[in-house]
Length: 222
Image (cartoon, rainbow, N blue to C red; front, side, top):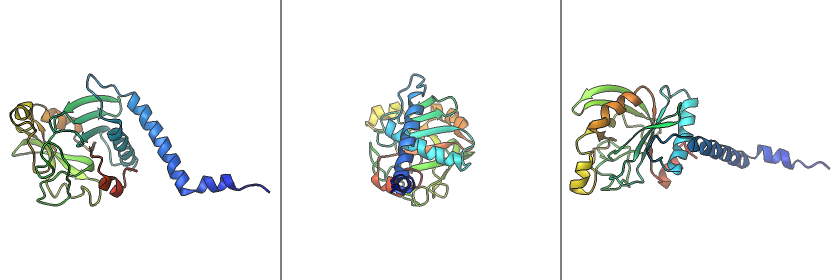
């Protein structure tokens, strides 16, 4: 009697999901190994793996028009440059920078996150960059959170990319940590215009932290 073992396994949802994960890991490792670091260190593979998975999904959904992936790794100390800007067409790191977290997300390290108004906390997950405007911090960039219940309130909260004088090596030297925002990923004034001009117009930003809560809730990472 002919076994239907292969047929069962071919349609087993768990096996199908596992195969997709294996294929994704292989594709991500291949892409990661070919990234031109341009003299910078690379983001951790774990942060890139999650970022790449969500980026590919958003690209397939037609959400991304500017093929730049920005990764912010909030597992790192705020005294470290923990923002990477990667050109996904040329597979090259084009910028690396200090970046702030919200003042209620933690002191030196960001450990607590929120999607609520007036929380003054950072939100994890995937964003698409919106339009630029000139505000109290000068040139700034609006962000649209792509993840329901995780960061989809970003625009209402006025979570934007902007420059800040408290995001600097001088501030770190004087206080032992980076300055904190009201929830925005603020960057040094020296690079904020270059950064905004590079990533505006529907590029992808991923704010990473190895939070179990985030990974259980997100629909863009597995």
